[in-house]
Image (cartoon, rainbow, N blue to C red; front, top):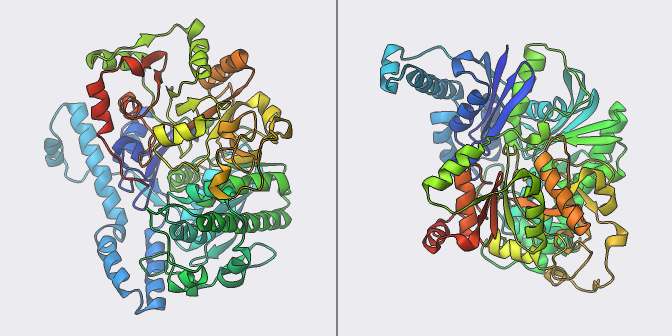
Length: 627
């Protein structure tokens, strides 16, 4: 058996993935273990989990592959600073110690981390101390170490797990080594580059510049900008096209770098950008205004138009009927929905961990198909629903709860789903913890907070009392895959919640006041499923499939049988600033710290009203930095 360990680390969203004889065994982000959102550090806990799932030690691994090439990135850093000198000198001085200590010698840093794991595993096996194992062999041999290019890892993560034998692959993000946008042709086990756009011209960084200017945090606030866009009007469209970006018919583009500071400065934008939009960037703690809503809508429209042009050109260039997507921009599910509806492709497939975390998986698959030159069988989605993280047995859960004297009830399989469906129908919010944790940023029904989409008050209640996040942010629906076209203008599957579609016309209400602007639109009933209908009648849809998530599918079926509606609100099981929960301990703490009504761990159900007040107060005292 050939075992390949893929790693991404040292920028954001570090992760590990393991592939055995071409099969994806496990993949997980380090933040889920450390509870540090977007944790960039070496993913030690993730590596250990992956090795455990593959039933091997690190010494059994044939190849470790890193998701990008740090020397190429360092080359870009140096050339950028030299091109902008002396402007970026202070930023250059701040960056250099990190590079000289860690990133420039990444091969040595990685080997040291891998040796530490080997020592720990040997100590565990031999029941000795780690220091004793180090003395026996200070530098044990590590697996062969390979490096992939950043966009190559993204492309591999998008094409190789997809069901397509042949596809064009688009990778759109902030920046890798030099590439910011790239196209690839995938066929069988081969992946060939077609073209790329290089730094500093970046669609992802342009979107992040507006994220920053609107007062949100770069690399995490882009979701907020996308959610804010429907509240605004595209009034800045002409300004963006006239001053910030020039776009060709094939989707290639060039930014006017006079307005941006990100290549060598401390900010995404500069004074010229401020002047262009009549004022400085919004402070993070300031209230969102109509201006930010209009800016969000404007840059969202620009992004969609460029992505559509790129997709159309890729089709004309290759004739491929299928499209695969990865990179941070591929998480823009509104743009993805437009590609599906308006683009020339029969179908599209998007890597659920489209950001840097997914690079660890792409790198591992790249090694299998191209380094080891193995054949590939297509026709099936190989991501297993993206349920690739840790799971916990009923015995473990019950033992933990009994040890901590927490009152619970254990439900029988025959009545379990109907009882939970009744709780939801009664207006309760449920913490839903089942099976293997999801890989990627979306909750897909195993680490989810769920509620009734028919309840008008549920959107604001879940935002403010449970998620502790901005009131304008929408919630996504999970729908029985076989019923998706009964509720949404969508006939394709969307298992990873990465496509936006409009709610069916016949489900919309006539009560809305289209003359309202901005946040005033929020509290209007727009459809018979008001809690998941955004202000533009759209929804970020997850189709739930029986073959990948039987438990969630069964709950939806029970809710449909009880209410006639095969849809639930599905949002990630966490509060603002916290990564999605991983363990039952994480889930219990989050449950206690919020206004959720019930926690469901497998078949175990915990009622908030039976919880000790002191335990609730202790959980609420734990705070996470706001994102």
